Length: 212
Ligand SMILES: Cc1cc2nc3c(=O)[nH]c(=O)nc-3n(C[C@H](O)[C@H](O)[C@H](O)COP(=O)(O)O)c2cc1C
Image 1: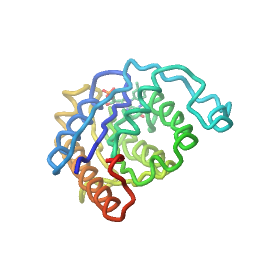
Image 2: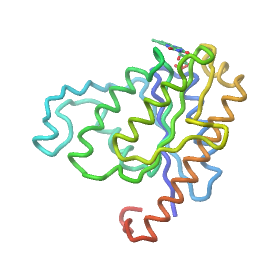
Image 3: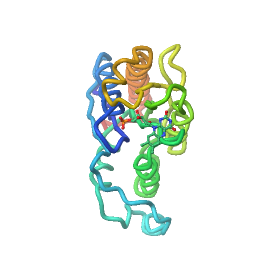
Image 4: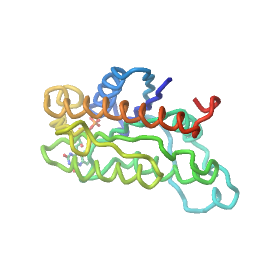
């Protein structure tokens, strides 16, 4: 059975977060049946949710015309997510927050579309203990809000991947060997749990052939 894992970098640049998400995807590929896909929010135009309720009133996607149309396809494709964010003021990046707010119409268009998908999170901060854990919690709450099953890291990995980049992009992340172990553990854990859930749903008759 194919297990589809989508990695998303929520950084507006190619740096520590993109590197970490890609490393987590490599680790996820160690699990049988896993196929991965990577996307970045860097360079994407994602307009904010206006709370106009157009999606609610019409049961359709957003009135905003931007790169979200293409991103929705990736979101639907995946069985599991590994989403990474740089820590901004002890929380997630602005683009990523905007991206998650634009998930609101998904529920209007395909009720239950995200139920029983699996999600794990990674954050990279320039300072040691600079808010990696608070930002991780924000990310995990976005999953919970959409009915996605949340996983943390392997034992010792707690909330997920947590890296101290020292504000030095990929090179800084690479040097944080302990942090990178939490990233790889998170990748394996998301893939492992996604496989179990997808297999279980199939056995229970909750997934049909055309959904695989
Ligand atoms: C607006 C802004 C706010 C930031 N706030 C924090 C912070 O609260 N804590 C922290 O440790 N690092 C903070 N940083 C540093 C970044 O989180 C850090 O360099 C991160 O690894 C960048 O990831 P990237 O290389 O993928 O862009 C901030 C950076 C910016 C631009």
